[in-house]
Image (cartoon, rainbow, N blue to C red; front, side):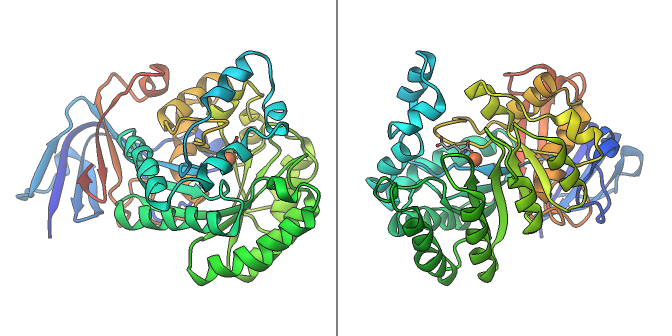
Length: 412
Ligand code: NIG
Ligand code: FE
């Protein structure tokens, strides 16, 4: 057994008992903390914490003096497309020159552009490109990541993506959850045969994915010009037969009932929500579904931000994630997401940190093990540099305030 003891922690955030799996509404304003704290880790698990006066007199294998530093649970990023091939910086320039995201997609760019690149990339190369990004975001404090397929769009390439995710799961100590997003866009050859592609997803992709046990969740890009409510429902129902839980892209550009459909199918989360109406809010109130906002996507595409105040002030929970992908969010920096949520969505630092830790963990179905400082949970921990207060984290946007990241109790 190996023990690590953190001592003299200026303030340790997000102390929760085991029963708290998410926080909602007004409760999001509270971020329970201990000042002048210690934290004891055995192997990969948090076993004790408290004020320094009660610090156990033991001889740990490692001691970390956190004088002047803040300790908090590692970020839980519940929505990424981190496995992709190449980049799309030309489309970025095209948008600066006046084309919209939708116009670029309609002329074969966008998701189809990434799919073309991925289809021409070997599994090994795809793995190597992807793990550079995984390492980068762990250093930025992320300790649990959901990763979607959806740039394959053929049986072979969707399986390739999901196998890469499985390999990352095996090789990295961070918690990974895999989502099958075959319904991300219609491949060109199916543009006049949408039913053909839905059938391919349901009858060909899904059984193979289930057989190799490649995914926990199922996602659909439910949006005008992409997948309709009928398509979405058919795919979620098919996924359910294989035990895949829905987590869906809805209301990015248009609100037309995607939220209600997600709730009806007990989606673990509904993500994006840049366009949200009263009906959507009321539907969410009667559900266990987590709304997820992706502010760095709004930032990068210059589209509206998810109305966080409306959501939280209605008593609902909210999670924050990056959406790390080559088209709409080429960044996996959760620190920037937390800052942007405070600056642009008027979330308080307490709300944003709750949204990026415990609620993010809930949106991956792992908040019994991740997302808070709790006895028995995994020791995935951020230790900041010497900073004045936790408000400084979102305040000093763009600055890297993280000194050390522990994953499963070990320095990464
Ligand atoms: O979540 N909205 C759909 N999918 C991604 C973007 C995909 C892309 O442009 O490559 C998103 O923003
Ligand atoms: Fe996304």
